[in-house]
Length: 511
Image (cartoon, rainbow, N blue to C red; front, side, top):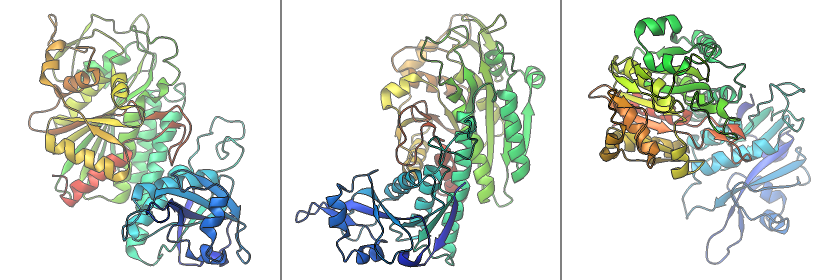
């Protein structure tokens, strides 16, 4: 993990492999050119105030994600200046948006793979900016290469991730700055752990193995953990989780992680879909749709990471995480289309499609979470391709049984830089899940399938409990190229949203 430090040192005298500065588009009517962002004054001065012009000559425009390298000026101990685009310059007296800083830092950190130390001279107008830059650095420097011949410390181009990042202008003795960087480190480290889990091949991460990872982390961070295996699930009547896992040689698990604070006045439950591999079961997925199905446990990974992060941050709120873990495989013992499962809640579900399995494991976990009567429940799942069709690959949908709670979760997501969009739960779609055989079917109308899935889950939330459903099917796994601080592969989507919700609940600001 990249080390983060704060420093008030001047850029010219700092020993580092590179100095990172920010540049932006000047959108004023008189210029329309390039401007050097605050924080890089010493660098600009060394170029006699002509740094913007030099960068423009090299083709820089200040666009978000753009990187321009140039030799450091005479007298600098660092040999390289890396200018990264921040997008449009804010209006007069306004600071750069935290997400712009986060993305710029992430791009620079990824660009500097192989470097031992880089100094980040990006705009830091307040402690929160230091947190954003620090978070961007740690997330952007991430790489997953445990299965490469070079070993886990090497990036795919043979270079190790950036070893150390120093944030210039960061006021190391200021409590607020120090706390912001410490928070960034805790959240980013746990988010990167979620990425590792999502990227791990399914032959090494079955439900039992995932549960073992959770047990080890719980022991390390003082979190109570309970693991229900097949025997306990059968005794408890968890028909949804058992039904999904019935076709696999690797048995299912339900993991409960409990972080408690002696000062807590609120309690939250996070529920994660943890299908460690999804073949579709008897309703087998078509060719071309199986290769990335190791990512179908991204919801459980996000919940796991968020609970550990809450514990590391010592948040004054009780947080319980429920990881509904199963492998969905076809075999002679697999659940068939037409089978009826009796869920943990007592309701019966007619299974019309075994590839609509995520809602079945979540239903049992949601009901289990509801029995503890938390103030709110949030479930996270790579649930439906329909949500990807609706919102694309970078935005997740937010559904809820309470409009105010949905708005609060959506605002938390936007605040931390995770694109999300509020979605409805139209009552007329519920009828499509009526079953002549059971209480409800696991499929309904094809159009609006993501909303139908949300309506199904709502049936298993306890009365009077605020609940939100995050369908992260699109952004959970990036099949394209890296961008900003987002790598190719597992992204860790929803971890930061959950942590922010927990922080708001601890402060009494969740609504």
